[in-house]
Amino acid sequence: MNALACPASLKGVLSAREAAAALAEGLGGAVELPVADGGEGTLDVLAPTLGGEWYEANVSDPLGRPVVARWLLHDGSALVESAQAIGLGLVEESERDPLRASSRGLGELLAEVQDRDPSEIVVFLGGTATVDGGAGLMEVLGGFRLPVRAACDVRAPLLDAARIFAAQKGATPDQAAELERRLLERRSLAPFRELPGAGAAGGLGAALAALGAELVEGADLVLDLLGFRGRLDGADLVVTGEGTVDRTTWLGKAPGEVAGLCAELGVRCALFGGRVVDRPGGVEVYELSGDPERAREDLVALGRRLARSRLA
Image (cartoon, rainbow, N blue to C red; front, side):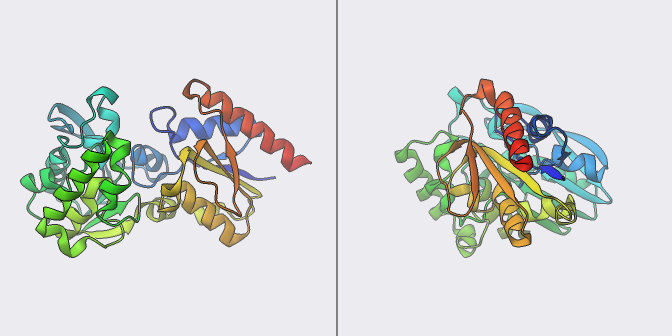
């Protein structure tokens, strides 16, 4: 028997690595291969496999306060995670204000990274507190002088940044409508509105495309860097999931991509969610208790349940 524990993070509850360890414990032994799609924790998922050298930069958080953001230099490529500078996790729930939150800190981070002259920059987009369409970033950064890839955590077009994702960042329906209006007013983003990934990280996908970056799917890139397809050879069970399984899971999030690859290659895949809002047909889905205090216990129990089903 060969099981892979491949969860994404349960935001604000367990990191992907912590979730993988809990699943592996319940399964009675499994290969721990946590995954990500560009959001918070992506570099922590990649670093154990890729290696490289960590650097730090002093930048502004989404509300303009000082924060230290880490980035990774691997084989000449600078790997940058937007959530390190402007992540939702840097802002207390009571402080969340997407009308005010700025992407300026990511611009500061990218400017410093660019000054170190890497061969390329890969920017992982996702998990930000912002819906400013990169307005703050573009106040600092006018363009790139080296190749840049923006790895987007979702395939969403620009306006979905307000229509679908703003609520997760604290926006009311009226505020979401105002954010959509602001995005529509950004003339520099107009040519990129329908580009897949343009709506990632509050519209940063469109902003980076306007500055010359190539948009790529974050989950695909991360899974490729982890050698995920090769790890499926001989596997009889893959367990993946995240905090909430909903329609965004199928817009490019890592658990949806893992499930899709498993289906393509005929490997059994169990998908879990702390909450399950969207349960598509043909996918083996498990809903946890939804209690953050029990998340680790829930995952150990799920691992045990799945281990029993493998032996039945």
